[in-house]
Image (cartoon, rainbow, N blue to C red; front, side):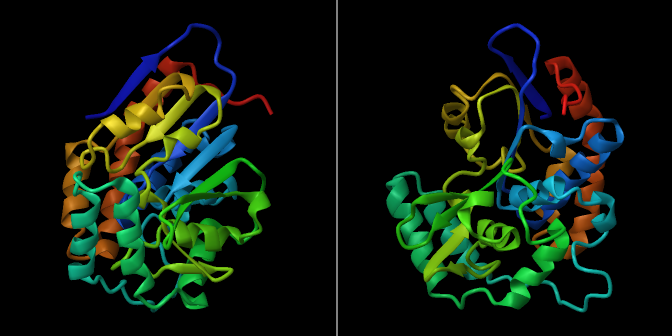
Length: 292
């Protein structure tokens, strides 16, 4: 698999944007491993001019803008000494949600509303669900306006985009963005239920700021048809680098169904391994340290 580089114009690249897509717990580990190794090679994705995070990508995007030491959770995403058990997976509910999302005969708005109704039938998130996210992403305050987090209003099925000016604490926004029915509870903000931004799109790449070089990291590229991402990328940047898990990483993803936390270190290492390829491709695309 690897990445695709699409050059639309020539010229020196100046503005850089990053889109970090959805991918569940192991997708977050894989993206974190990628970003950690890239940082060691002098490519700090957290220094990009704009970052769009969806679900797993929201976790990693928030950690990046907060300057989090990504290696500190290479083996476990939970706070040190945590006795928090692995999340209880409601497999029948997860299967029902995917059945709706992958039913391409359904109108997309109706599909999202159906998933939203499933989510709202579940108990909403409590502080105990959000506090580990606050530790993971390195705080509750948005460092600046560069990070944008995609969520979905469960009742309407409409996408919302939260950033520093939205009035929603960063950890709450991240928790909402990866609140997938059957895996994590919906997050209530001002009496509205919010769920995983991946219910709208696994990347939400159309939210990327106008830029010269855009990196789109797609943990779920092997699961979704390519037409949506192509449409999202139609006018986003002069040069687009798309990057996805290779076959070995996908094997780790598939093995995670039995125990997602046990698969976290392997997924992180898979990201470290693939970073060599991504670093080369970013260099070829004209990515260089931002002038700040």
